[in-house]
Structures are given as structure tokens and as C-alpha cells.
Image (cartoon, rainbow, N blue to C red; front, side, top):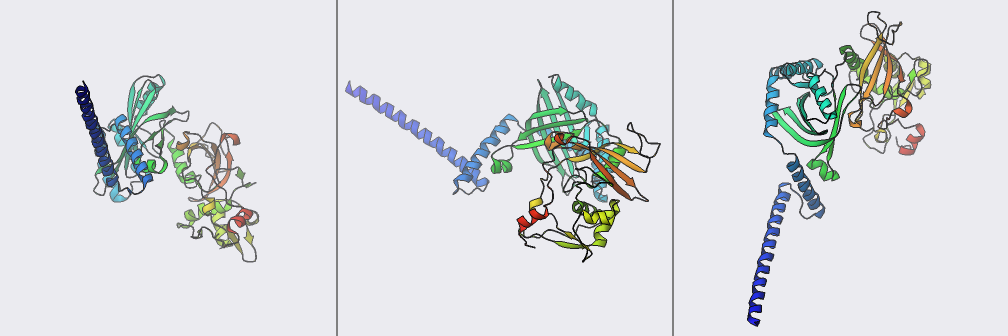
Amino acid sequence: MAKRKTRSRRKRAKRFVWIITGIMAAITLCIAVFMLILAKKEVNITKPDEWLVTYMSYIQKKKYEEMYPSSEDDSRGAENIAEVYRDIYNEAAETNTLASPETKRRIVARLGENGYVAVDSENQVDMTGAEQVLEFCKAVEEKKNGAVTIVAITDLGFRKFDLETENGSVNIVRGYYQYDQNGNIQNRSTVSYPANLVQYTEEGYLLFEGSYFSDENFALTLSDTPEHTALRILPLDETCRELNRKYILPVGYEQNNIFLTDWSEEDFGDLDFYDAFDIFYPVLYRQPVPYVADENLGVGAVYRIPEAIFENVIMTYMDIDKETLRQKTTYLSEEAAYEYRPRGFYEAEYPDIPYPEVVDYIVSDATVSSADGENPDGTITLIINAVYPNGNTSLAYSHKTVIRLLDGDGFQYVSNEMISLEDERDIWWHSNRLTEEEWEEVYGGNE
């Protein structure tokens, strides 16, 4: 009886040894595979924090690959799209007109003629096949099955969005394709993600957003990369687009408050003329502003701009007398110059901001009218919406800007009025210039 128990123990011990051996072999294999991953990613294996990030990144990536596998049809579909307008692209590349509105308009039209839903990625060209997108939006709302592919043209290629919906949920596959130096289309990235938001807005935009896996971003934030998209579905009056390109887009909403505050020729309010100088100088003189911030972030640069230069820049684009301009700025009469402090590190703004879109206009010419009436004094009144993709809105706020036409191609900005109520607009990304007290506190007299 004792011998049988001994044999039984021996058998169990052998099985235990084999199990332990198998487990150790599996662990060794996993470690070897993991070390190979680390080696391929050139991770410093002496730093445990890099081990952890790489491992978590690998697991997250595998999860996304299993949930949203890529399809070989994506590349074939992109090559077919590129072939449709290859002749237009080659011609524009030779004439250096890839970024021109006319080139993008031709490309979008050609794609539309071949049955594609296409639009300019900056929403400066009317979408072709818009009815297909409207049908898709209807399917999402009614929780039916549906799919649509949208091609958004960029300067050097295009983005392709494949949207599918089922029971109200939407999945998105976004590919970014770019031409190489030889004129061949290359897949720069393809990602897939479920949409957290899909919305068709009153302004005629399709908005959608979601998050996808990215090696680089995950290593920095241990989170997925958000992506926001705003594509205009409904057409827009071409005159609105032309007025926008000529008068509004060159100013925009970055590092100035020309279109962010109420002002007029009778009362310039809080308009910052230094920011206006920064905007108008390159337009007038066709060169960058030479008065730049110091390379040392702890030093505040201060310049004396001759009155002839400063006043010429401002008065070319605004009807303001010298006395008023000097009261609104720091004018040094003994030097006949304006004190100027360029924006520095502490006045930087968030880079991702809304963009303006003119949606209506009123002119003095009686042949062109609007529901709001006409201007009798040779001015154009523009109604502008601020479109903010990253804010998931096609109407962050709106404003009314009046332009005065001068002889030739000259013009002046007459006024700006914020139409949205103050509590309805959020311009958190904008930063005012430092006041004199704030400037002294930050730089402490280091000039």
C-alpha cells in the first residue's frame, strides 16, 4: 500500500514538474517575443518605464487591430481615386497651383463626374454627391443600415472617409493618402474608430468625431488620439467664398481681435492696433514683420517703429486719424515713433482655432440685394460664422463685418459687431497682449 502511494506521489510530482516546465517555457517565449518588440522599437531595456509604455502600447494596438482590421480594398480604392484626376494633379504640380481654389474645384468636379462624393478638406469648394451624404445622415437618424465614402481633397493628396452605420452606431475608416515625388499615391496612415458623435447641423455641415490608436500619442498620453471632422454638405454662394478669401480669411481669428470684439470708426473699443499691425504689415509690404520677439524667453523685446511706417500700415486698412491712433497706443512724440512689444511666449495662443466662413453679404450695388437690405455708402456687410471642428460645432459664434471698397483693389475695415451673445460664444483659445503692468511683472525690466 505504501509503495502504491509512493508511485502515485511520483507520478503527481512528474506531472507537476512538466506543468512547471511548460509554464516556464511559455513565459520564456513571451519574454523573448516582448524583447524582440522592444528591440524593434529601439526601447532602452534598462528603463522599466519605457518597458511599461511599450507593452501597454503593444496591447492597445493589438486590440484595435482585432476590432478594426484594415482592408486591402482601401488601398485599391485610393489608387482608383488618384487615377481619376491624375492629369489635373500633374498639370497643377508643374505649374505650382496645387493649393489654388481653381485646381481643387476642378478635382472635386472630376471626382463628382465619376460618381464620388468629394469636397475640399478646407470646405472652400461645394461638395459633389451631397445627396448621398444626406441619405446616410437619414439612415443614422432612423437607425437603419447605410454606408457612404467621402473624399476630402488636400493640397498634396486626399483623405478618404468610409462611414458605415448600423442601428444608429457609426464606424469610420479614415485613410490619408499623399503623392510622392514621383507622382505615385502613398498611404500615409489609415485608422478606424467608432464615432462618438455624428451630427448634421443647421448650417449644412456633417460633424463626426472619435478616437483611434496611435503609437506616438499613446506613448506620451497613454490614451487614444481624438479626431474631429467637419465637412460642409450644403452648397454655399460662390460670392460668399470669394469675399471670405479676400477680406476675412487673411485676418482670421489668430493672435488678433479684429473679428472678436465690437468696434467701429466712431468707437474703436478694445481693438488691439498692435495685433492689427502684425496682420496688415505682411499684406501691405509683402514680407514678414521685422519686429520679432527675443530668442531668450526671459527677455522682452521692445522696438521704436517710426510713425510713418506704423501709421501707414494701420491707416491703409482703417479710417482712423493720427490723434485717435496715438491715444490707443503708446506714442513717443519726442522720437516720432510708436513703442512696440511683439507677442512673446506668455501671449501665445492655442494653435487649433475656428475658421471664418462668410454665409451672407449686403452690398450697396442695387443689382445685388439681400433680405436684410442694402448699404447705400459703397460698403459691403459680411455675415460670418466661426466654424470650429475641434469644438464639434459649425457655429461657435457669428459676427457682422463691414468693408469699404476703395479705388482699384483697395479696401478698409469699417466695423465689426459680434452677433452672438457674450455668454453664447467661447474664445478661450484667444490671448490678449500683456498689459504694461503684466509685461513689467513677467520680464522685470529685462529688455
